[in-house]
Length: 210
Image (tube, rainbow, N blue to C red; front, side, top):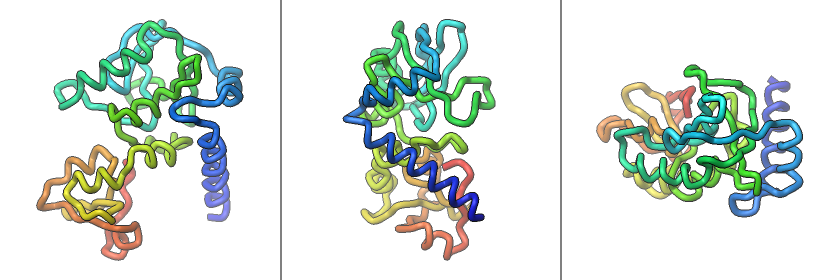
C-alpha cells in the first residue's frame, strides 16, 4: 500500500511540474525538447474524428485523455473539422504514456505540434472534446479534468452546483461528470454526489472507466 501511495504521489508531482510549464495550450520549449529527444515526429495524413487520426504509415493514433463525438453523434463534424485544422498534413510529435496501443490496435499518444501546441489539451480547452481517463495512462489526467471543468458538466447533467460525481442507482457505481458514461445514465437512475466519501458511504463503487 505504501508503495502504491508513493508511486501515485510521484506521478502527481511529475504531472504538476509539467503543468506549470504550459502557457495556455502551449508546452514550454524546454519540455518540448525533452519530449522530442525521446519521441519521433510523424506526418498526419488523415483525421478520422476529434480524437483519432492516421499517420504516414497508415497507423491510427488515439489521443489519450480525451473523448470526442463519434460519427453520427452531435458535434461530430465540428470536433473533427477542428482537429483537421490543427494537425492534418502537418508534422506532430507523439508522446507515449504507459500503454502502447488500445484494444483496437491504435497507438495511444499525447500529441504536440512542433511549435509546442498540446493538441489533447487544445481540443478540451476549445470545447471540442471532454476529459476521459485512460487508466493506466493518466500522466496529465489532473490537467485534463481541471480543464474540462467537471462542475459545469455536473450542472449540465441536472445536478446541483456543488456536485462533483454522479452515480447510477442501477449499477451502484459513480462517475466523474466529465465521463462519457455519466451522460448515459437515465434521469430515473441518476444520483448526484458532492464527494467520493458521500458516494462510498452509500455503497457506491468507483467505476473502472472514469
